[in-house]
Length: 337
Ligand SMILES: [Zn+2]
Image 1 (tube, helix red, strand yellow):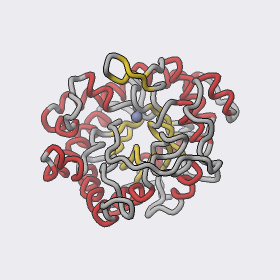
Image 2: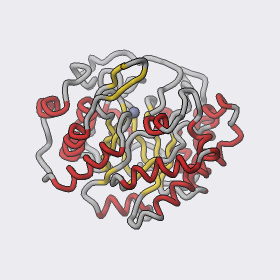
Image 3: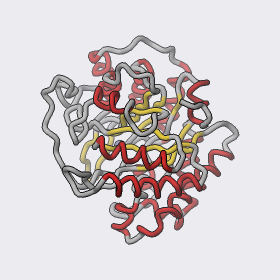
Image 4: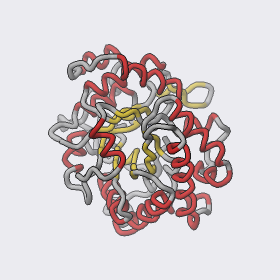
């Protein structure tokens, strides 16, 4: 792997890197309505996106994801904005570049590329070529806006991860990818943690880092991280702030800043180098994670018992690597993180 990109350089110099928290949670708090496309805010409310990024950087994040998770043609089409993919992605990264460069330290702008929402062939209708083309278009916009690296997250199909990686490669951009292991330890399409570790070595370009994001709770996420064995590629852990719970008609994450501080240190002890949060993770959680990573010593690799003692129980008995996992299940669209 070349060390010419900013993230590889940071990985070579640092013991751990704090990523950011939830984008969706923060934008909903700023007034985004369910069903709105957050990417349109890059043009309509750049001040709010500036604040989204600044809040993470001020809380101690060394890396943040741009507001472009759903910024591919397939998803923007739902908002009749499929012809604005390049512009909206460029803006997402441009605002990010501004915040990172004004921070007074090195902060990585990671261009977020979420799933298309379509099911890929052979199970679905989206061909590899069309998926690559969509991701490539998005990648060019993020590159033009000054992203340091591209970052696919919440992916469940190996085919889609490959297409995103290929799109980044065509744009000449370094790339990271994380998948969501939300179905009894596996991704919705049935991939295990061990399966992703193997896949990472066979992608169109070697990822700068790979790992897991979202899924169920932070305990499950760490069990997945422990399953990324036999790899020399840096590992990413971006877990939700606790477990999602329905409360008064909306989803609430019950993880406290103290719990996320424990999670961050356990993630480091489990082998993750890039550590952040996903749904429900606010700047308050990030501050607490940063402080813990800076002040608590590194510990031994935790056992599953130690993880559940500190963070709560797993959502399923096994992580799916014993062959007892569920059959792949197909739904059309993933929830936004
Ligand atoms: Zn999430």
